[in-house]
Image (cartoon, rainbow, N blue to C red; front, side):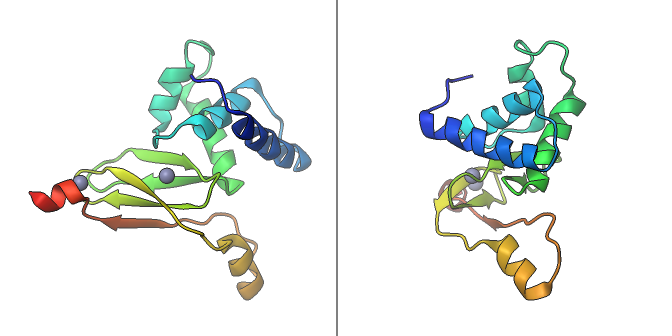
Length: 148
Ligand SMILES: [Zn+2]
Ligand SMILES: [Zn+2]
């Protein structure tokens, strides 16, 4: 895994602090999974994260990776991306405002830089719900697949 840039490290610490404030225990694997997602510029699956972190954490299980990702999804900092005709779920750290645009044919995921409104806050204030999770993904056909 690549070393984190300073601003990425700050994001990791910020998220960990929020988790700690909620009484969530910060384990080495929790930190590692979060760091991995923050540093990744792809949209990795849990299996890929597991495989890549295994040399560092030989006793970690895939279930632990899933569990750590779930905590981050609940925290609202990681989003799940489903690709058509693909049972794998991909994950993305939503550290900067962007939308994930998924190709319905080949499954390629592109990032679109766009200012995304704070959906949790908006939804909570307008509905009175306590928001547990938000999902926003855009689907389409990528330029390559449009040619074929
Ligand atoms: Zn495509
Ligand atoms: Zn993305």
